[in-house]
Length: 150
Image (cartoon, rainbow, N blue to C red):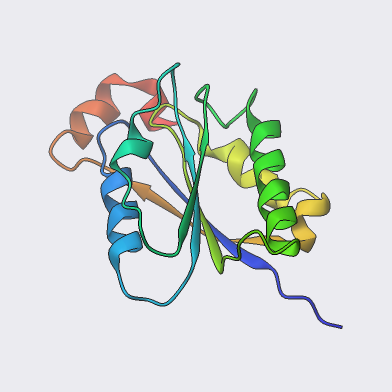
């Protein structure tokens, strides 16, 4: 039996670049897909998840504690495994996963999560990375902030 994997899109960009706005646009479109969103937050109180559109065929999981890139990377893998387990048991089903990194995350290690030979590759595949930039402030941020250049 051939098993198809679920596409995962990572949306990244510095603070204020429009990540949540883009995800809201995706969630509001009538594309017929059921989307699971993994929202990564930095800090004790999640803010962005409050702004995400709800009411359609989406599931939103919030990873607290910020940077998915290193210390929380295990939480990302667990969240993806939990999504798969819930889908297998009929809890809910989804056609795709969208991961929004926090505005201070290095997306490289998040991408590596899907390139490493782990059990995740039997369920998910990385179909793209969308990096957003605030055009009004991009040149200043690139000049002054090393993490933006990285």
